[in-house]
Length: 332
Image (cartoon, helix red, strand yellow):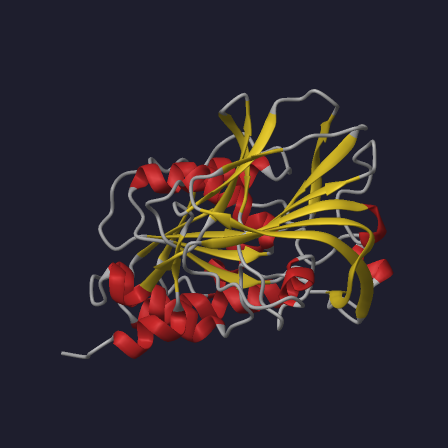
């Protein structure tokens, strides 16, 4: 059955990545495997929270495992109406981008995501800077999304969608790294951009930090895991604010130990550390072919002479913060 997207006050978007939490890092770390059954259970709890807040319609991204469709079918009598956004599926990351763009065009109040840093990067590419994201972690080494209970997350999203909490009270603005070629933006990263000595992409996930040449971070917090934990070992750069971090690796520098994966620590030698400022472009210069990893996943091969640069921007996603939103909510 075909559904035409239209502006629906109070509608919410829902994007679940069926592949998150299942990459190569399960083989090299002690990462938690998030099954599709658990994702479906989380979606059902989200829907109960949305229902309690009065949300009537949820646009969702279909997937070949039927996670969302199955959750809606179990709540068909009482829960919100589930409307799939229809487009030619590729079963690639780009599906999340396309679905998010359709949802934003439909005027959803926010988009709830189940996935990792990479999932949210793909969603933000489609949703743009004006549609808040409520990110729930189901991946590995996650920094942008958080582990949280679907019931209260759905309730917070529903109250926001219903206009019972305004944007400044419910959300905060995150930063983003813009990757430019000859001054034109070609890609982005929500948390980290890694330059590695590998000359081909191969398995996308970055787990061997001995190949790192440079690392750019929008945040560096010592309690997180993944590449940003390397910066966190040097101090705390909050997710909000106007600062970022640029690290250059090399022998003879300051050696730090960091949790780069679940149950996996590594030592790296930091030859140089610079703070990033909003709006300042940092040129990338290579003496060899390298790969660029965006939010933990290799996605671009670069060669000497490529006119690439990195800029820290304040125009990242609005993050709908469950704790912040529910604290701000004042029942009538």
